[in-house]
Amino acid sequence: ATPTALLVGTGRGAQLGILIKGPEMLESTRTVDTVVLDKTGTVTTGQMTLVDVVAGAGEDRDEVLRLAGAVEAGSEHPIARAITRAAAERGALPSVETFLSTQGVGVRGTVEGRGIAVGRPEAGQPVPDDLAAAMETAEAAGRTAVLVSWDGRARGVVAVADAVKPTSREAVAALRRLGLTPVLLTGDNVTVAKAVAAEVSIDEVVAGVLPAGKVDVVKRLQDEGKVVAMVGDGVNDAAALAQADLGLAMGTGTDVAIEAADLTLVRGDLNAAVDAIRLSRRTLRTIK
Ligand code: ADP
Ligand code: MG
Image (cartoon, rainbow, N blue to C red; front, side, top):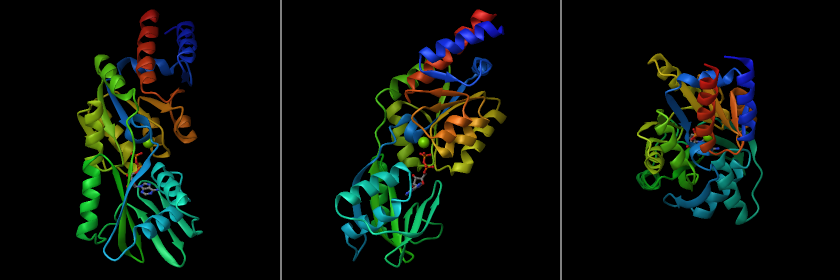
């Protein structure tokens, strides 16, 4: 590959809104055959809104939302932002002590002397039937449901919804036409993941993956002989972006993801991933 052709490709990339870390990055895309897409913030907007609050027996919905909103104020996660925004619209939120956030799991903190947890149900935590049913109903509709607990007991469920980006479906179709197999990868549960995958026509779904596990999914595909591009935006995608043969970060995403990736898609639009792969193939053809 001549440095000149690669530099021309890099310049063309910039015009398309694709920032390339080094000209040599374009070479990695030549043989890419699989593209792993993070769900939240990559295929979807990641801007969640609150859609439902369900209180368990003897609990009050407003209280479930108020306490969940207070604890989530310490988290930057899209789920947290949606819950805190909705709670704050209904009144001032109490302050939080001993806040702890666990990536891919949820948050906990002390509010008004009570230990509050918001997130996935903990291993072995009993979830009453009515709350389990509320979670299933929300998830079947493609929503993300989190459990709100205090003093060790499940008290309510909060459901948030995220919308698929308007360009995601056509971008997935274009990636397929380029000969790539799309795979949807998410920490969210399988029901939500499948609903989103169906919306954009992706057949392969890997769901319920903890942040540390995303990199293993990329490694496993590579062990199977696949050459993997990964597109992501979150802190939880950084290791997988670095491990992939080609890492593409959404420009709208976190700095950690952008630093770990080879390319940055400035507009945060999946169509730019299609442009990036086309560009590199064209650049490399010119070189040969
Ligand atoms: P994704 O891979 O789709 O970006 P994450 O790995 O960030 O998703 O989160 C996975 C799951 O962990 C969420 O669906 C949710 O159940 C739980 N979770 C993570 N962060 C929070 C939070 N701040 N509040 C509540 N639940 C959370
Ligand atoms: Mg994400």
